[in-house]
Amino acid sequence: MAPRVVVIGLASDFGCQVQMTNIEDHLLDVLGLIDLTYWQLASSGHLPAEYDVAIVEGAVTTEAHVEALRRVRETAGAVIAVGACAITGGIPAIASAGELADRYGCVYGEGGAEVACGRIAPMPVTAVIDVDYRVPGCPLDTDEFLRVLSRALQGLSGRIPEEPLCAACKTRENICFHDRGELCLGLVTRTGCGAKCVSLGRACTGCRGIAADANLDAAYALLASRGIPAEEFTRRLSLYNTLEEGCDR
Amino acid sequence: MFFRVMDKARIADLVRGLSTEYEVIGPVAKGERFTFSVIEDPADLRLDFDTTILPPKKFFFPPEERMMRFRVADNEVVDDEAFASPRVLFGLHPCDINALLLMDNVFLGEFEDPYYKAYRDATLLVGVSCSPRETCFCNAWDTDEVHWGFDIFLTDLGDRYFVSVRSVMGAELLDRHVETSPITAEDTAEFQAVVREFKRAFPAKLDTSQLPLLLDAKFDDPVWDELGERCLSCGACSMVCPTCYCFDVRDDLDPDQRSGERKRVWDSCQFSEFSAVAHGQTFRESRASRVKYRYYHKQWGYLSKFERVLCVGCGRCTHACLADISPREVVTALVEGSEAR
Ligand code: SF4
Ligand code: SF4
Ligand code: SF4
Ligand code: SF4
Image 1 (tube, chains in turn brown, orange):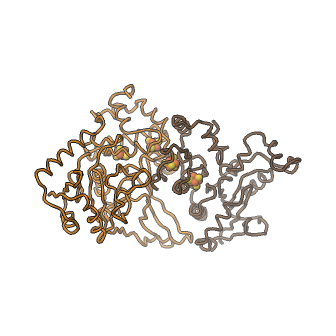
Image 2 (cartoon, each protein chain N blue to C red; image 1 turned 90 degrees about the vertical axis):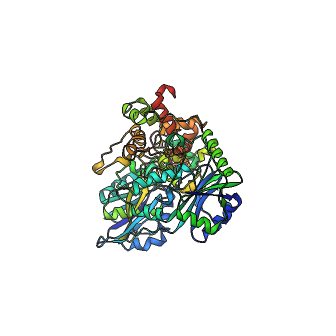
Image 3 (cartoon, each protein chain N blue to C red; image 1 turned 180 degrees about the vertical axis):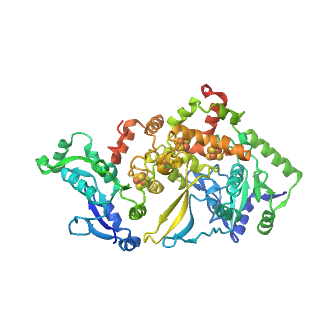
C-alpha cells in the first residue's frame, strides 16, 4: 500500500506549500508513489483519521495548534516539519519578543484581544512535538524537500546539515559580504540551500536557522571588532531566529 | 626543459590557437577578486591576477561530483564512467602547481582515483610567474619555485615572457600556435633578476624551525583552545585550500525512487559531523580539537608520509577566514611561543 501522506498548514503564508506545487518536473513521479490523502492548500476535504506521513508547515500560534500537533504526532509514523516557521518559529516568532497582548491592538484594532482569543506566543512545531525530518528555509528548497521526502518514504534517518553556510558560499566563489564591510548571516546560518541568496548578490538573512556547529560567541566578537555592534547583529538575526538560543545579546 | 621568449602581445594568439583544440581555462576578474574560468575571449585572461578565490583543484576534484548512478531494484551500477574533455589550464602560480603535485600523492598514489586521474590526464598546465601578496608565504615551504609538474611556464619579463617548456606536448603546442624566439644571454640574465626580485619581495620569512617536533611537544598548548574559541567552524579554509582533499559521499534517490546517484562533495575537518561515526559518536567534539587536527594533518601527518607539508603557502585560507586564523599565526605561535604573537 502506498504511504498515506497529509500536508498540514499552521500559522504561515503557505509559501512552502506553494513551493511544493512548484516541483512540476517531479511532482507526478512523487505523487505516483504516495497516497496524498489531504493537502490543505490544494484540497477542500478534511484531515483523515489515519495517515502515515504528516508534512507540517507553519508556526504554532494557538492552543488549537498545540492540540492538533499532539494528535498528528500520535497518528503519523513520520512527521516532516517544513519551512522556517515550523523549525525556528520564523517570522511569526518575532511576535513572541515582548508582551504579546500589546500586539493584538496593532493588528486588529480595538477589541483585538477578543478576536485573538486562544492565541499563544508563537513557537516552532519542533518546540511542541518531536519531528523526524526537517526541511528548513523560507521558503523550503524543493530539491531538499524531495530528498527528505524520499528519505522519509524509505525510512532512512533524517539527516540535516549542521554547519554554517560559508563553505557552500566559497564553492560558489562569491566575494564575501564582510570583505565589503557588509553583514551577512551566513557565518552562523545552517547550510544546505546552496548559498542561493549570497550567490544572487543578497546577504544571507538566516532563514535556515542557526547551524548546530555555529560559534555565536566568536561571531559576535569578530563582528564587533569589525565595527558591527551586537545589537545590529541581534536585530538582523531576529528576522528568523528570535527564539534560537544565543541570538539575543 | 628548453627555453624560448615570447612577446607578451602574442598571448592572445596562443589562447586563440589552443581554443581550436582545447577548452582553455584561466584567471578572469570577478569583482575585485579572480576566479579560474573558461576563457571565451582572450582579452578576459588576466595573467596579472593575484590569487583566485578557489584553487585549480576544482577542475580535478569538483566541489560536487557524480561518481555513479545505480538502480534500486537490483542494486546495479549503471554508469560510473569518469570522463574529461581535453583542456588547458592557464595561469597557475608556483604554489598552485606544487599543490597539484601534493594532491597527486593522494589521488594517484597507492589507491588511484579514476575521476581525478581522468581530469588530470586530460589537462595541460601553463604556469605563470607572480609577485607575493602580504598573505603569501610559499617561500616558507619552498613552494615558491616549481621545477616540474607543468607543460609550459611563463615568467614575466615586462614586455615578454621567458618561456620554460617542460613537456613534449608543451613544445608542440607552442610550436603550432604561437611565434617565439630563441633566448639570448640577456634574456637569461633578466630572468634571473626577476627571480631574485621575486624572492626579495616577500614579507619576513616564516620561521618553521622544528615544526613537526613542536607540534608533538605542544599538543596540549593553550594556543589550541584560544583558536578554538575564535573559530566559526565554517569550513571556508578547507574549501579554498588547494591541498585540502577531504570529501563526503552521499547517495540520493531520484524522485521516482527507482534509481539514484552517488556523489562526493567537498568536506571539512572543521565540521563536527566530519568525525561522526555510526551510532552517533563524534571523535572531535570540541572546536579546539578540530582546528588542531587541521594543522596536525597538514604539518605533521602528511609530512610523515610524503616528506612534504600539506600546505603551499598560498594564503587563501588567511583571506577566507573571518576569524583571522592563519597558518602564519599558528606556526608563529608554536615556534615562538604564545606570548610572541
Ligand atoms: S558572504 Fe556570507 S556566507 Fe559567504 S563567506 Fe561571507 S559570511 Fe559566509
Ligand atoms: S542564503 Fe540564507 S537567507 Fe538565503 S536561502 Fe540560504 S539560508 Fe536562507
Ligand atoms: S593551508 Fe592555507 S596557505 Fe596553506 S595551502 Fe591551504 S589555503 Fe594555502
Ligand atoms: S575559515 Fe577560519 S573560522 Fe572558518 S573553519 Fe577555518 S579557521 Fe575556522
